[in-house]
Image (cartoon, rainbow, N blue to C red; front, side):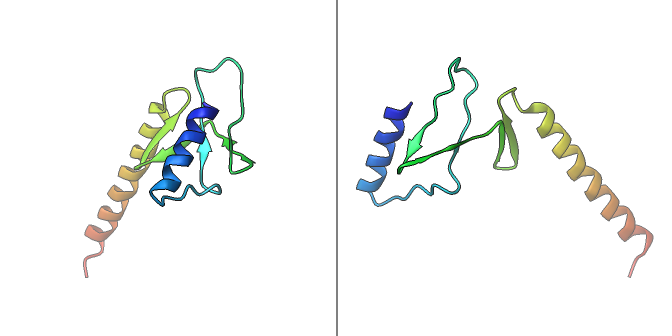
Length: 89
């Protein structure tokens, strides 16, 4: 994985793309041995879950967290609609 990361960083610099080390993190779920990835001389943080395009991605599949987030959003929208209909301007 380290070789792929180094290759990606090299290709990115060729076309003037920048990889931000402060926001770049890694997540591995099929590796038996945990090997840290180093980019720009810094070790990347390893996370258990992250949000991508409003969907929760996690090492365990992410569906539970994603469903809970959707339910919370729908509940808040319902509450706002109920308040607006109860108190019309």
